[in-house]
Length: 127
Image (cartoon, rainbow, N blue to C red; front, side, top):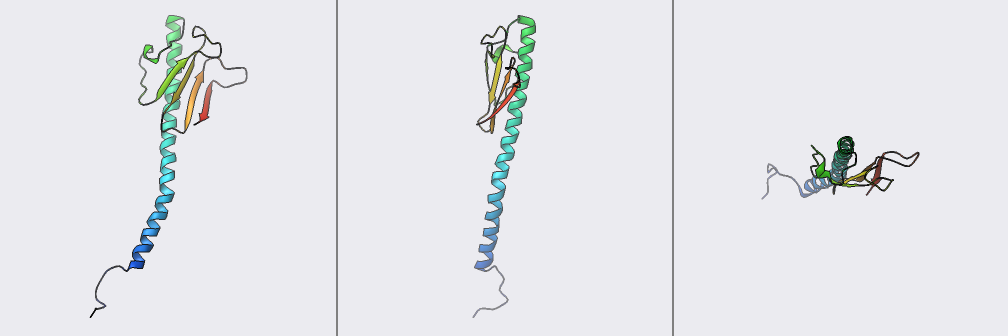
């Protein structure tokens, strides 16, 4: 014979709690993913700007822009993938373009030293 003094949870109570936890997780996980992507975006944007500054410093000494990021002194790239190339002039002697990306970032970033009239130097493109 069962006694009313026994303690525990009913199956219905456990199902309700499980459903509530599932709903909260379905809201929190996408928000967390967007938060992380935003952090990676900031890291890529900062790295691209730092490399662009390094390119200008390199130009001041060598009178041309570097073709490889390893030629620039003091660049810390972490996990950001950086590519260097000529800007709109098509020649590294007069212009450069820095492109940066990260696998977990939501956007790609670029810095062009000689943008077309009316265009910005700093470009952001969604992946």
